[in-house]
Structures are given as structure tokens and as C-alpha cells.
Image (cartoon, rainbow, N blue to C red; front, side, top):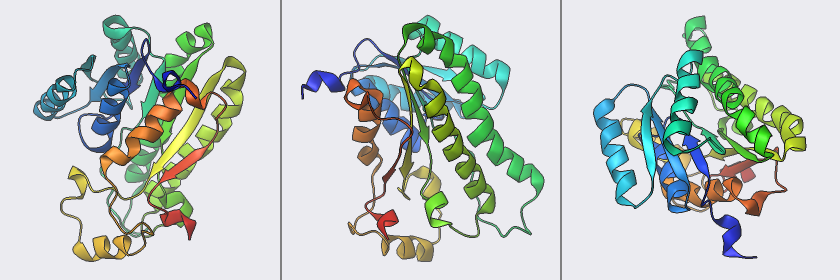
Length: 254
């Protein structure tokens, strides 16, 4: 197999929610593989500027674009602006996420459930619909949903997040069938609990319990996602679609 199959030169990628954490590292991986990358943020402009400086320091080409990916008009503007600055989007990584508090079902209200559905069902739908005309026209595209092992494990108390991620998994599988005739692959990557900024204040007992469940006996790092994301974005995965790949050191093998 030629290493050229993993090259993303000549491609444009969009990674939603990529000013921090796993999203930032995935965007950097795509840029290092040769793609022009549209990074995206919604609120923290200072953090986004710092992340984009880190991205550019790798020598990659891209743009940082502010947009609320749960808003249809903002999504359409995001995709159009990415196209104007970098070229039409060939690869999209659906990563944007809100806060994820764990509560019993009695403690959640429907507004919170709706916010989960907005990020994990509505946003993937809106972004996918916006990038599809170009992908269909060129008969090539890569759509990567960022899922979670919580669907497989049934983590509790976490019904709102687990339900929404389960729905995104179903979206991924059905869309893979729908878009296969256009040579557009649709896959999901399900990271384990990989400590990033959002986990800084997580209780130590929860961290200890999760660590004990990792067969590889080490914490995952954001960099551990890089190879999988590049693979699913490249020609090397041309015959892979509808899959859910867990990147978690073997936690879901149990």
C-alpha cells in the first residue's frame, strides 16, 4: 500500500467544534496530512485564536470560522465561507458538543434533552446537508461522526447524552447506505474518556474507576485519534462505510 493513499493534499476539511480538546487535535491531524482545514468555534474568541495559532504553527493551511452549528443560517454561512477561503468541503468531521453533566432522569428537563438532540442530531443533519451538493457533484466525500462509547456501555446516570449519541449512531448507519452510490463514505469514531480541558474538574473517583476498565492500562491522548481520522478521510478507507470505530484502549471489548 502506498503512503499516497493516506495523503489529503488537494482536499478541504471542516471540523466542527475544533478550538479545543479532541476537535483541535483532529483538525491538526488533517492539516498535517495535507488537507486545508476549516476549524470552527462558537463562543470563546480568545481560545479560538490561540488554537488557530497552534494549528498554523504546524505549517498547515486553514481558517478559523465562528458559527453556531445548531443554527441553519449559521451552518450555511460556515460551509460557504470555508469554500470561499479554502475550497469546497470534501471532508467533514461532526465533532461539536455542549457541556455534558451527568444527572438522574428526574433531574433533567426537556430543554436539556433538546440541547443534546440539537448538537448530535440537528447539527450533523444541517452540516451534512450543506456539504452534500459538492460531494455529490464530484462523486467523492467523507463524513465522519464523532460518537461515544457510552451508547455501547449504557453509562449512567447519563440518559440525555446517551440517547442523543445513540440517535447519531443511527443517523450514521442510515446515511452510509443512502450516500454509498455517490462514493461518499459515512463513518463514526467513538473515543473513550480521553482527558482534555473539559475533564479538568471531574471527580477523582470517577477517573479512577474508568482507568481501571482500560485494558491497555493507560489514558488515551487526543493524538490517539489522529490516525483513525486521517484513515477515514483518505483513499485508504475507500471501501469502509457505516462503521463505528472505538478508540478507547479496549474498554468496549468487555
